[in-house]
Length: 303
Image (cartoon, rainbow, N blue to C red; front, top):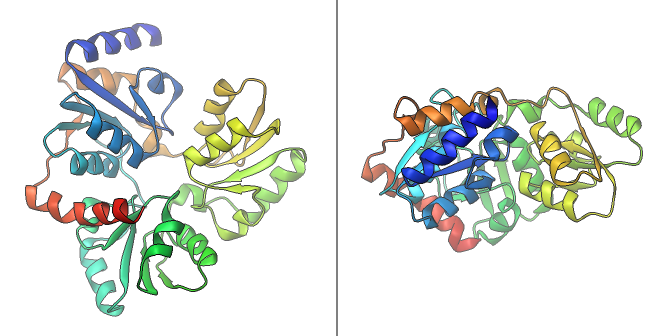
């Protein structure tokens, strides 16, 4: 059945000149029919360079928005309309305006995992892989980092010369991993290297052999001479790595590292997008796209 739906999707996307983007946290059967897989911002960049005018984003809402910002003239469809991101949506634009009033003169740095409405009020955007380098290049010493306090804490540790203000927020999935879980995982797999996403708590990151973005974790595991790894990010990455590196062993740091929003997308959702019976077309006013693109353009300039 899965193979049948995959074949229908592959045929339809070719007939209709549609490009499918799948975030790294998507299921293996969705990644298999995607044109591009990877982290959210890189997918948006690849989509902007792609020749097709219709894009299906298999991810969450803010990713589809970012895709639309970088490809304003293309039709962008979110494959599962209900796929949101608690981190991206946890503060409103109004709350951010109030925070800016509390910290006048601060450069507002937004993690890419934010809504377009928030990006409109930010100075610079960052990804998990570029956050340290971009914050280092910001001339202003005073930085207000939103919304992930764990990623922000990691940046703050790397850049003691900066005055970085954090707010209480972040990814509830990564934040749920505890120091006790990290200790127990390392005890259960003493030969394994611990690879951790910086959205995890600092108390977890201190045990890591490597801290980095999802793509960074995948690349580290692929290139490493080690044979065993504990994966401290969404549980699907351990699964994907088992396919990529069958000669190595991968253990999820916690069975609770499951993103329900990422798991809500199905092959049938993608198929329905191609038949016109599903998905959410992302509509954004031209002025909003212009305002939200400012912080992204600054990221590209500094990055």
